[in-house]
Image: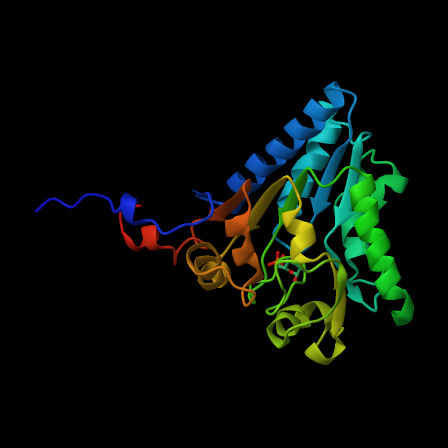
Length: 268
Ligand code: GLP
């Protein structure tokens, strides 16, 4: 009996590309970002990027830095908005997303400091709602996000939009899920040291981006990736809202794709 590959039983509801390795994915995504920056630049226009932190985008940032150094890729026309920051958090602290971005990208390229936006973890809590409104306004004033880069947490969060985050949520203070705090425990030398809250762009803020690229690597992400891509659209899995975006793209390595329907066949 001959068996045909099960390609037509794919239940993916977001365009999904699976490559062999995280490195291959990262080089491909870095190329897309560089092409967009150059294309905008050639028309004298700015390029607005939404950026993520975590281990997932690190190789993309390394590759962008390499392109800056070796190929003259300039970030002079780039404006960035980061997704999130722990709260409270000082920018110089080891776990700060502000510090992460400076070390992995901003200090190594020619971006203008005034074009960088990262949620401020040092605010008085009473100032946060107005600050979040201003963050939203700054995104609009920049012309909206051209390309939003995303990772995914094991709760299905994008940014720090934990389960329960609605389709229309905007930049705000959020309480972190227990699983998220457990996953961050090693960075903070123990779960009790992980902040309980964070400032994050909302699901609605993210979905307003004209292009969204979500990357996920490794077997730990496989179960939540299957839910986000093949499951129902639900606030229980914030990443599932990408199914409703007209220009979202998911990139996976083989391990993160392992629980997708198509990967049940041994020959893919
Ligand atoms: C944190 C960040 C997310 C990120 C997630 C996954 O929770 N707020 O934006 O996607 O971690 O992190 P990693 O890429 O290290 O798996």
